[in-house]
Image: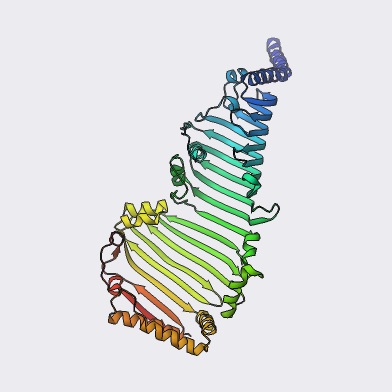
Length: 492
């Protein structure tokens, strides 16, 4: 028993000595690291702090000599997967890490981080915190090119896993001091090789040359289930240039609200919110997009003069619109459908469009995923049906009022003249068949009576995109080729 007590006392004594000696060990290693950093000449640093038990290291007032314009008021890593031997040699993750090297840490913190570009651009961040960092080895040997840094950033994001990122008070200023972008807060969670669980952005401001006068602002942007793998794969290529499609960003949910700024005010525009939602049923994806609260009020002054005159001629003081679109991707069946895409104004009416595409092959889905409409002409997918519905609720009256004011005639005369011109219309290079005549007559009756105009296309066989793109002669009978028909129902 006495021997056991002696052993326990001895262990506690050694632990106490170890705890007491820890600060001296930390300072010893910190001094070694600081001396080696100074000798290497790659970084200027005012002070180094090391916590061996916490596997942490901090550089205070650090400024890179290898990457001109990169500095941090404080850079700290904890829970660091970095050999103690490297620290003793003065090689920290900041100084000894080469592009392409892996890095793991439980937490990275940056205060007053700043990047200054060669042409006067400055990007600064008040604070940046990364948690659960796991950066796998990646191809860091990006050849010199105009967009070298975007390629490198894309490769890093493809190799990165991260539990959480929080950034505060980011400011970007281009050369000559304008324009600038400010972001109050950004939080991203569950990052995994280009896929993001959730992201929240708050307090976005984009300014022009006038300091303190934001041209465009957004109060909040949220997103869930983001998939950036396609854009990152394109951007990782140094040959990428602006204008080359980067591919579609998939999202289960994304929304933005609180739009403002001088740019919208200058043109008399107000916008409430934009949102998109996706739901996956097996391999079928259903997407809905809404734009709410769009209001256009012509501003005073010369900038809004023409718009005020046009809207005044139509008898409108303001224009209110909303957009609601829903689509379905059914890849197993090779179909893409626009269920309904509606643009509605409470004092004007409702314009809606629907369509169905069949025989969608790999080339079609590549065009959709790449967000490149030009690739559609390489696919054998075909238009099976389409429908356009125009429900009048004042649009005709306001339009005819403007026409009558411009032509110096009564609204009734303007209506009759417009209907007559529609019936007489002969599109160049188009065969004027009985079906075309009936189609134009239906449109003319809609002008005369109002109500709802419906135009449908049911080509038989379905119209293939590749035949349109090849420039094949479809013949002058457009109505027959598209299977066009129209109907008009009077106003209720």
